[in-house]
Each structure stands twice: as structure tokens, then as C-alpha cells.
Amino acid sequence: MPNIYDVAKRARVSVATVSAVLNESAFVSADLKARVNAAVAALRYQPNLLARGLAKQQSHTIGMIVPDIANPFFPEVVRGVEDVVRAGGYSLLIASSDNDLEKEERYLRLFLAKRVDGVVLTKAPGALAPDLQRSFTKAGVPIVLLARAVPGLKADLVELDDREAAHEGVAHLLRLGYSRVGFIGGLHGASTSRRRLDGYRAALRERKRPWRPELVVEGDFQVDAGYRAGLDLLRARPDAVFIANYLMSVGFIAALQQYRLRCPEDVAIVSCDDHPWVDAFSPRLTTIDLAKRDLGAAAAQLLVQRLSKPGGRQRTVRLKSALRVRESCGCGIRRVAAVAGT
Image (cartoon, rainbow, N blue to C red; front, side, top):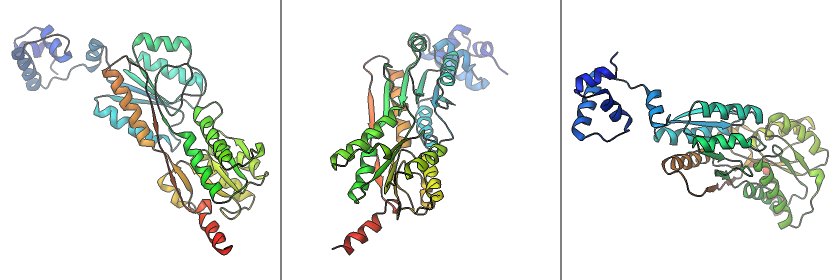
């Protein structure tokens, strides 16, 4: 296998000149650069990418931490990130934090040790340790927050319009005439959960509907939480429910079946997030379609831009969602009833 000395000998230049050409670390005349590149091609020389990265203070690697890669929300998000960073010449390292602060911190410190150039982070609820923040600042490794805001952390942020998503879903149910609309929220402490609850409250206020604490149950974005929340919530006899994510909707439907209740005849459902397989549900789920791949792509674009032009004010990008109306909201039943009543 040829080495850098073989390249220098064939190109009739010094090893330092070969290194300068390969690492773009110093000015080299066009003639010498052409000779080096010709020698590299002729010998099929493969540079040591690790050494090259250290020389340039770059690893051409991006780290990404998500709460749970098994959650069907995140594969599309990751794909959006991967498409952009790969086009920018970067590789992607992915880790799941399980919303555990200690595990998240271990991965962040590992990323620093691996000399990643930047990090895309969906933060576990809770603050980032001050010494870890200082380490990232000192290393010049930018963080872009994805989906969840973190008070006190100065970083670019790409998020969904979670408040409007929940507002639109709940408002749709209220327009259909439901009077006891329940809410199953997400993980405690996550900004996404708080904003979706804010959207639920706003929709109730606009329609002058009372706030009923017994109709609001906290979950954690997992199937089991949707099931447990469903068992609690159904005791309060809601006639419709907005559920803060897809996985909890699966759990809620299991609770609905345990109570031998039907959807939408007994309880209508609107779920936050849309997936290709929702058509397999019977009835098909009415959902708020979240722009998952766009979310990841926008975060990666902000990070690549930050790496090419460090400094400047932090930016926030907020993406819109869309209501996908299907049978679970009971719109067909409600329209038939409205016509019959005229």
C-alpha cells in the first residue's frame, strides 16, 4: 500500500508539500498541486482521514442524539439530517438518550472526544450541565436543537409549531360539536408537551369551553403511557380525545377496546403525527401531519451553515403542520346527524 513518502517521491516534491495539498493547509502553486494530485491518482493513495481531520481541526462528522430511534417519529427526522449532512461531506453518528440526562451527557462527552464538528440534539427534559456547555463552547462545536427548546442554552433551534398543531386538532373536534374533548399530553418537562397543551387550552378558550382538569392526562410519548392515560381518561367520559403523539394513540385504542367503546361512535380521536400505516387502523386515524423529514433537514442545514460561518445570532425555524381528516374524528357521523336534524 503506497504511503505519503511514495507520493512525494513520484511527484518530486517534499512530504510537507504533499501534506499541504491534501489538507489544504498552505498555499501551493498550481503546478506542484497538479503533480501531487497526479501522483495520488496514479498510486491510488488513500490519505489517513483521521490524521487529515486532526490537521484541519475537522473530523467531517456530525453527532446526533434523539430520545428513542425506535419511536417511529424519528427515522424520518434522522433521514432528513443524513441527506443534508452527507451532501455537505459529513458522516453522521446517531445515539438514543432514552430521555435520560445521564445517558445523554455521556454521549455528548463522547462526541466531544471523537472530535465531531457539530451536534444535532433533541434534548432530554432538563438543563445541559454548565461545564458541558463550556466544553462545547471552548471546542468550537456548535449544537442545533431539534424539536425541543432548552431554556438557558444558546443554540440554533428547529421546531414544529406544536401549539398550532394541537390547536388545529382540538378546534376540529370542537367544530364537529364535541363538548367533552379530552387531552393526553406528552413527556413532562419537554417543550413540545407544554406547547401542545397550550394549543389545547387555546382552542377551548376560543370556543368558550370550560377547562376540565379531569379531561387532561399526562403521558410520556410511549404506547404504555397512552394505554394507562386512556384507562384514567375514559372514566371521565370524554366524547373526543386529542392525543399528543402516534404511539400513545396506539395505547389509547387498546384502552378503548378494554372499555368496549367504539371509535368514533363513542369516542372520537385526533392524533398528533401521521404515518403511512395509519390507513391500517379501523377507523382510519384523523391526524396532524408533522413535517418530520423537513424538520431534520432544516436542523442539518442550520448546522452546516453554522460550521461554514461561525458566529452571529442564534436562529429559530418553526415548521407548520397539516390536518389530515379521516374517519376516527367522526366527521361522517356528525355530518349525517347535522343533515338529519335540519
